[in-house]
Length: 196
Ligand SMILES: Cc1cc2nc3c(=O)[nH]c(=O)nc-3n(C[C@H](O)[C@H](O)[C@H](O)COP(=O)(O)O)c2cc1C
Image (cartoon, rainbow, N blue to C red; front, side):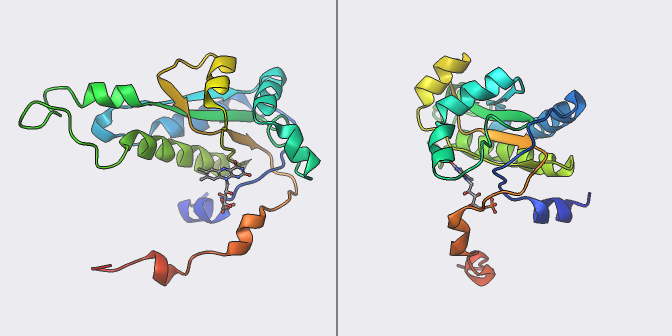
């Protein structure tokens, strides 16, 4: 698929066929995600991939899928092919930026202009979303409200923050988010040229 088509086709899907996809497809999506850039090549991003029905049901419970079902949403977490959970470790960035080639003139860690760890895991997440489309599948994104409980249930080490859950699978007709009624920001408002 052409890159442009992948980008154009990507949208958050919230209803999937409850059927597996070949392991090679899961591996290809994970491999694409590892190609994400990272500040100082810190590579603080990790992916937790869950394909088992029990694992998916566990995550669905943590995200209170039932509350969504009661509101008319499909079971888009427990019923899909795989859940990709992008995680990031902030401490890996601090350790990396205390290395000799990264400290400032006074030998100190930089003052972080923005939290690069979250920038980087966002890049990882986007690659999962795009790679899923490139594999002829679709993906969604759910935030995680109780991160400590999520970590504990899935054995994620304390230094890693799971930033969301990306269900991937064969898309089925789904209910669209009411947020989409907001429409896109006009491109003239989004893109500023030469000077803001
Ligand atoms: C950081 C982030 C958190 C999101 N959290 C949720 C969520 O918890 N539940 C959900 O249904 N969609 C969630 N979304 C999806 C957005 O609602 C969606 O991207 C937006 O409405 C635009 O739609 P589109 O991606 O289909 O173009 C999230 C998206 C992002 C980037």
